[in-house]
Amino acid sequence: MAPRNHKNWLSTPKVEYISSECYNNYGIYEQEIEHIFSKVWVPMCHMSEMSNDGDFRSTQIAHKNVVAVNRSGSVHVYLCPSIDRPAGNGLDTDGLQELHSEIKHGGMVWTTLDPNPSQSVEEWTCGAFDCIADAIDAEEMDVFHYHKAVIDTNYKLWHDTNSEFYHDFMHYFNRVSGFNDEYFARKNIPFDNGHVNVSSFTVNYEEYEGFEDRGELSFPNLPPNQWYMVDLFPGYNFNLRGNAYRSDIVTPLGPNRVLIEFRGYGLKKDTPEERSTRVKAHNSIWGPFGRNLHEDLIGVAGQGTTMREGTETRNILHGRHENSTIHDEVGMRHYYEAWGKFLGVNPMNPLTLLQDNVQAAE
Ligand SMILES: [Fe+2]
Image 1 (cartoon, rainbow, N blue to C red):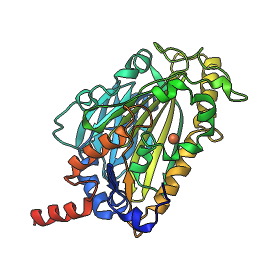
Image 2: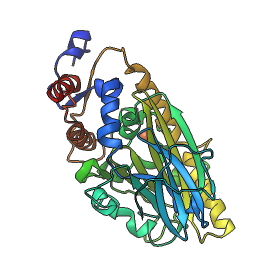
Image 3: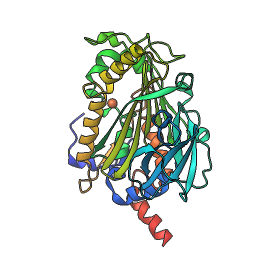
């Protein structure tokens, strides 16, 4: 096929696509805050981060301060207009408006700004966690690692790294340890509400120089060295690699800026030796000097730069069909179908319809 020139690039694709305007338009960002982040269940933190009576931990959802408080082992979440510490003990919550909350899926604290949620967390996640439920709910987990990053990119580009594979060429470690027949056979499985699972396969850690097999400390009820991912709409990822578990929680700060919180988990019953092994496994993949997370961050920072507001609009192709196997873009198509429904827009042409919506509302 001849190389494509500028005119070719701008012509309407013959396969599924979305417009880059989905990623960089301020009006769309405002609609997302109002119609998505103010409505959905958000996994705001983990119970182990607030394990004592009176402990609290705060975050922001849709530009609003939210605080979760441990009251004798149960959790209460409040809107908190002003807060002087991100976490601590002994917060006065008198007069604060309480939000709906649940502890679910491995001890995560979930809340929603929606005063009348139509679904429970179980109904909202609708089976997306089933593949790892026996592993993350069998034993109490605790957070051993936390860091956050503010990245100049759209939050959806971060979430896309779990379903698109344009950036995959950078994952050298994964190529060495994981690009086996099982990897290419693994499936993307869509669930209602825009969620997607990536089914498991066996990672051959020992193929990478200096790395060892990780089967011994695999999470409960898991065959050794498995790798599952739960991609939850609109931007929450749960990643279980054999003996270490990670969650990514996004908080959009603008169309081209996102805060991502990364947590690493082990089992609360770990001996010091077991914990040390788990931390090493976590850090060698996802820690400061690890292999995997960084390539994703570099990828989305580049995508964010090239598609930032003011750049030429382009079409992002989602046209790969490969029987729902790993490089089939079914996950991307499924996510953006849900995203378009939430906003009442067509992701192929979001601004036109957005304008129509605004005019209809006037
Ligand atoms: Fe990646």
